[in-house]
Length: 402
Image 1 (cartoon, one colour):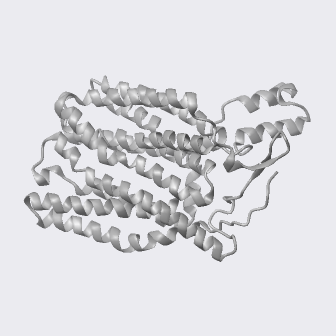
Image 2 (cartoon, rainbow, N blue to C red):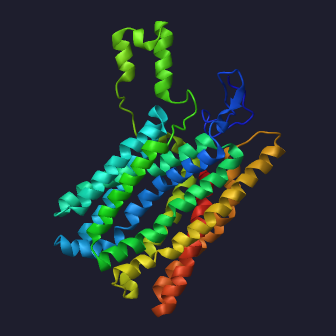
Image 3 (cartoon, rainbow, N blue to C red):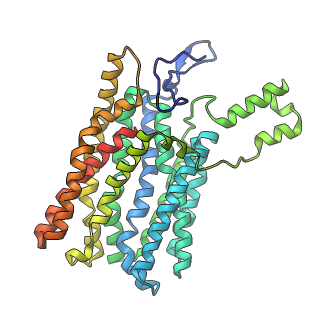
């Protein structure tokens, strides 16, 4: 049974937050957000947070080892850097594809099909003996870990109520953003003291462990009847008037065959100018710290030290995530109460407006000035402090999308 919703979404007419109810076997009615115990919810949150950490860790651990990879494969740093661009492209495509298929088949199947790609791709990268094979395996590796961010956020929305979602997402973001803080450092240490291949083998092993854990413990979190594959089965049952197993064979097997979906369909939400602006601002704020730090400007050649310079931005992200999540929930509750129970998604924009207008551009300008006119240890120290501030403001901007 479904109760009417008092919450509307002006930006997305088909995206409403309703307290959908379902009948239990004994006739009692319970909220779909109470399907899982608090302990199970925390377990799910931990698993999806680990999955969300992987894309950023896979990308960040590769960057400090580029000089060693170039030397090992008899190439140049410029050529090897193309692997970073390829992995970003693969991550974008994989994230869109994962989100699309998660809406059709559910969250669990996407995780169980994508994580093996990560394991295979990581092993392939570690065993690469040419630039071409490195690029191919990096693409597969990034495709395998990419759904962790988009599908993980969807799973959190499945199990937490509106008023709880900001805090849960803050935990998810904080865990995910450990990647930018630790991945370059870990990858740099592995490259400097052992081999860049060791890091890639380790990523493959992590993928195997996470796959086994999710296979054993991760439940399907999609709301009952919300998956499109379930809706298709119901449609076949309704049109044939019988159980789908006894329906006309062609129709039955058509409902069971894999479906080819358009992975770019989620981009349709960018038709909203507000969401487009949020996406652009968040993208710029998240990528500035990658471009602002140039090891050659500071005379740093040690891979481990290069990785250590990414820590402040990651620390800023992790500090900001729980703060912004709590503020976001408080803002939604306050404005929902003012409107007598009516909620708008734009309410989550309110706590992010001031940081996006002031702190993000000011921190970028300060980093540029320090990089241009500063020198020596003072430059490194001040630049890292500014980049930590950028980490804080980046998550502030991201809060608008929770």
